[in-house]
Length: 156
Image (tube, rainbow, N blue to C red; front, side, top):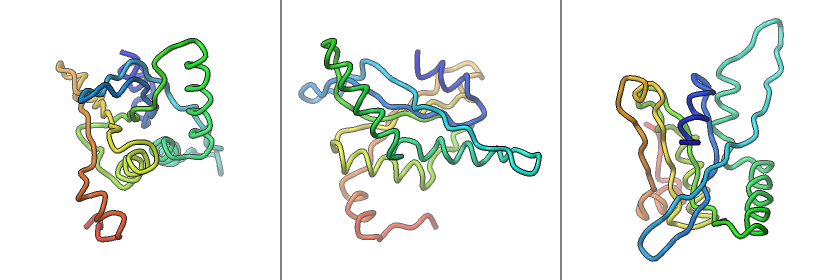
């Protein structure tokens, strides 16, 4: 519910956050989510570039200041004895449009740096507003991870 609320409140701008939970045997349990802090884009020449704020939000999961934010939040959760393992991240989408370089780079970063079992949760706000909840989980395959690492992947 927190993911849906965050994504709906920021629509049409991209919303991102991280997921905490437990990796119990063959099940990845997501117990909580936290939005990444937002970055205000300065207005220049009396106009606002709406793509700039979406691009910053899309790159947020691997931004250095958000990595520190995640680390601090997980540390505080552990202090109060709450499930506090980083199990992935989430982002919003519009009409199924979410597979892009930011999404791939974010998921590659999570699977390479944290744990190969981390997931990306995608909430499609516009499809959900049409009557059925659109919430999907993704993970990059081991073959794709190797191809991406060796630069054998292009968006064409």
